[in-house]
Structure formats: C-alpha cells, structure tokens
Image: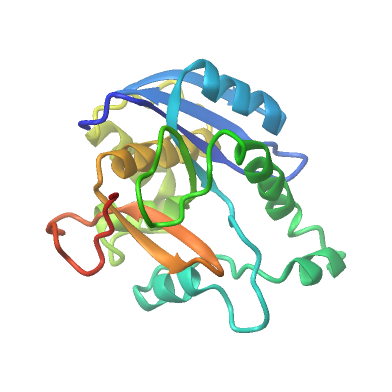
Length: 223
C-alpha cells in the first residue's frame, strides 16, 4: 500500500447489531469500535486524520423502478448485492429488513460535511467517503468464481493477512468486513480501484482486479 494516509471502513448493521468502525494506518489497525453513533465515528476519523472512508451500505436510494446502475453493472460481473429500493418503498416496509439501510443513510449524512461522497470525477480532495461492500471486495481479490459467502470468514481474513494486516484482533465477521472496507479505501487513495455506477444512483468502489492495467476502460483514476 503506497498511501500514507489513515483510512477507515464501516460495516453497517441494524439497531441491534450496530455499526463497526476500523481505522488503518498503513497496515496497522489503530482503532476498532462497535456501536458508535455516526457523529462519534466522524470524530474518531477526524482524530486519526483519515483520508478515505469506505461504507458498507447504499450511498443513495433507487430512483424510480429502473434500479441503481452500480448494482446492475456488478450483477453483469456476477457480483450480486441486495437491491436498493426507493426510500418510499423502504419506509413502507414493515419487515424491518431495511433498518440497516436507514442506519447507513444516517452515517453518510454525518460524514458528508467532512468527507464528501465520492463522485468519480475530479480530485478527491483531502477527504472522501464512498460505498463499497465485502463480497465485491472479495471478488476483486479472488475472482467471482472463487469468492464464496459460505467461506467468507476464512477468505476475507486471508485477504487482510495477504495485505499485511494482522487480523487476529478482529473478533467478528463484522469487524473483518469493516477492515476490508478500510483496505479498499487504501486502494482508492492509491488509484487502484474500479468505480461502478452513475451520479443518479451513486457509485460503488471496489479494488481493481489483479492484472488490471492503467488505461483500462474500467479503471477510474483521480484527476
């Protein structure tokens, strides 16, 4: 990892599970917190001078019935995620399933004044937040044919270990997933990433697959 900036990852959960924040400086885990309010997570990221924050939740709701472009592009790569509904649809649901998406919305709102949302254009500036998710990250590192939800506990820890990150202090899969989001933030700052989506539905950022060359139509750079 070339970037010297601290980076952060946030795994979003429902009210019962809570959110998990992991901050990396180079390959060292310098902060690992659970069930913090969004404003407290912002304060921690400012305290550690974080440059980029990867968040495992939709950054924008679906507009209309067409679906988010980012999710459709990933599906064509055989990388599937929960389909983000319109906000009205989520509000009308009584299942409680979308609770975590509303929690994610609160996190993005808290971070926005200090960590503007990634828009895939121009310079990133001093700070940025962006959407990502662990299965897509795992697929980027291992390939879609290998990445498996059934093996996520071993595969995702192995990715962190291969990146030089000591994952022994991470006690749950939620903490591991937050660390993967932070690792992706390193890739963003190092300009080794792929951005799927558009401005209407928001962008999903994942690490560039192994072998992706500068100049590839799928490789999106700053500047």
